[in-house]
Image (tube, rainbow, N blue to C red; front, side, top):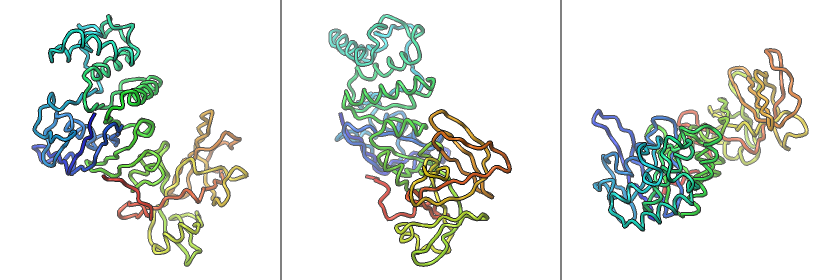
Length: 378
């Protein structure tokens, strides 16, 4: 296996559109890294440049100790699994998995050994003699992954491989790919727009927006310490709530006051110390839905209570999702199962905000206001 290093890699198309803006980071040997972001953010373009399917406009791409900018895809020693399975319909599973090795003129015995080993790892030993039309979607995806495994490449590349599967099968295949990474110890780069896949699979996550890397970090640090408002809103489901307002007060007696409402959140000592220099300035407060509680004994100590209008209630069994509003502000809360009043224009509910879990962002730059380092761009 090998590490992958990008130094200010750019992609500019002939019409002048810049799809990737100087990406610089390193994927360590044996690491599982996920590229995540909304449609059009450049994640698949970045992956295709690593694979050699897109030309690099400028910058340097290393795979192992080699600069591979000008190498053809077949010479880069990478294997790519696409969103569509791209299986040959007239070939059996065995022959689909063996095809690349036959083209490279591997010995017949070695081909058989590699195919059967990959089939065993992926649990498709019983369908080796079937053609793709007789397989389920999950089996076809396993065969596509198996075709990559038999090559024993330095780097595995996955381009949204689970997008065509139903929700239950996606969860199953997500687990299987993570298990496969543990078994092979392989360097893997995985592209998805699904932040749940990113959070559950990646050793590190590269968050992209409009062709620019926003943050590179471990899943939990990314969740707890987003570098900016975009990352904070993209990672987490439901998304983080954002309230525009200002810092009011002086000294240690500071509060966040939301615009055009009576909503006021007193700040704890650490937040007050951080935001003292921003007193009177416009600030955006972020609070995750799971850090909002129905006011009462289940709310954490030191929480701040505020009154909201209850608009929609979604009972999910293991939790209840509440949609609330206050003046121009809306918010979502994930709370434990409990009696909740019927929603309506006159239905109010008191919610407690966990003041130890607040996030603050500059309204102009949308950068997080924090003294904690939030991004690893190495």
